[in-house]
Length: 308
Image (cartoon, rainbow, N blue to C red; front, side, top):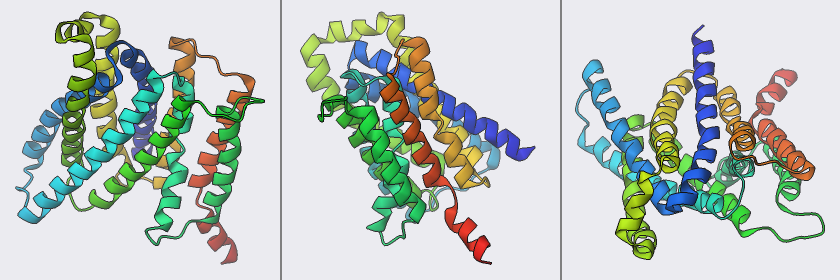
C-alpha cells in the first residue's frame, strides 16, 4: 500500500511536469522567456518556504551546523546556476518554436546523458546505456531532422543543450543532497535561479517594452494561470512529491515513472495547444522513449542473477 501511494505521487509529479511544458510555451510567449522563467522560480521559492518552516516545527529539526550550512549554500548556488542555464535555454527553445510535446521528449535525453558524463567522474557506464544512446540517436534524427533536410532547427538545438544542462544539475543535486536537507537545497536553488534571471529580465525584456507595458502583461489571465501553475505546482508541489515519493522507493522504477512526463507533455500539447506530431516525429518520440526505458532497466542485476 505504501509503494502504491508513492507510485501515485510520482505519476502526479509526471503529469504536473508534463503539463508544465504547455504552461511554459503558453506563458513564455506572452511575457518573454526570462520573465516567465525567473519569476516562476521565485514564486516556487516563496511557496516552498512555509513548507520548510512547518516541517521544521513539526519534526523539531535541529539547527544546521556550520559545516552543513556551508555545503548547503555552495550546493544551492551551483544547483541554482545550472538550473538557470537549463530552464532558461528550455524556455527559449519553447518560445522560439519547439512544440511542448517534442520538447518533453528532447529534454528526457538527460537520462541518457547522465551516465555518459559519469564516465568522466570515473563511474562505469552500463552496456544497456550505450544501447539506449544508439537507439536514442535514431529517435533524435527522426524527431528533429526533416526528411531531405539534414539541418536541425535552432529551437530544437536549444532544447538538446537544455538536456545537457539538466544532466549537470541533476548530478549536482545527486552530489549534495545526501549531505544536506533536500527541501532547503531546493529553496536556495530556486532563489538563485530567480535572482540570476532578474538581470536579463531588466536588461532585455523590461528595457525593450518599457516597465509599464511589461507590468501590464500580468493583467492577462492567459499569463497568470500558466505562471501560477509553473511556479506553485511545477516548482514547489512537484518537487515535494519527488522528495517524498523517492524516499525508500526503487530508484529505477521511480525514474521510469518520472520519464512519463515526456508522454504527458505530448498529450497535453495536443489537447491544449493543438500540436500534432507528424508520423515521422511520432515514431522518433516513441523510439526515444523506448531508449529512456532501456537506459533505466537494471540489466547488470539481471545478468548477475542469471550467472548466479
